[in-house]
Length: 172
Image (cartoon, rainbow, N blue to C red; front, side, top):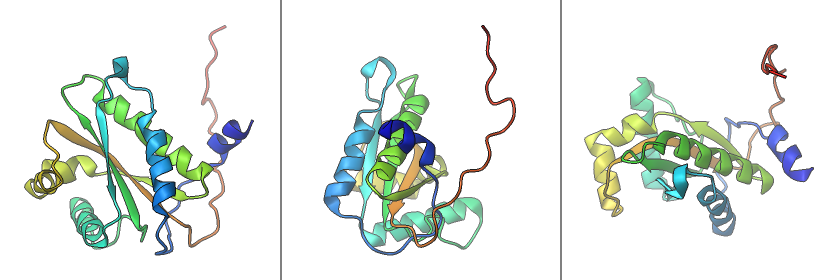
């Protein structure tokens, strides 16, 4: 029941304190991500854990530029986990999405707030994004799937929206 409760109580947070999440907790969250199901267990995704403020801020600016806005799309979260996946694996997009789900749910289970942030695809298709990956020793045919931002909420926990009608159809 605890795992089920965790799944239905997790919410996205969009206002974070600047307090850093302890490395041991980040490592546990990442470990959960590495155990997400992947097509034929090929493990197409990789996770880049960004705790360096300079790189975090650079990525934030790149992400904001994709939107054409001047804001912090990471909402002041001090940790950014970037999920990328090998495009040579036909299930790469699904595999990366499952990794993201595990990261988000593991964070919640460990008392850390999180949010899925898009535009990693555009960031890492750019020359600047490719250079960042090269500087980290990452080479290959990777596509940015998403960012999982982590930190401690600087707001009340968001409430769940009502579930829409006709969410589920039964074929009995």
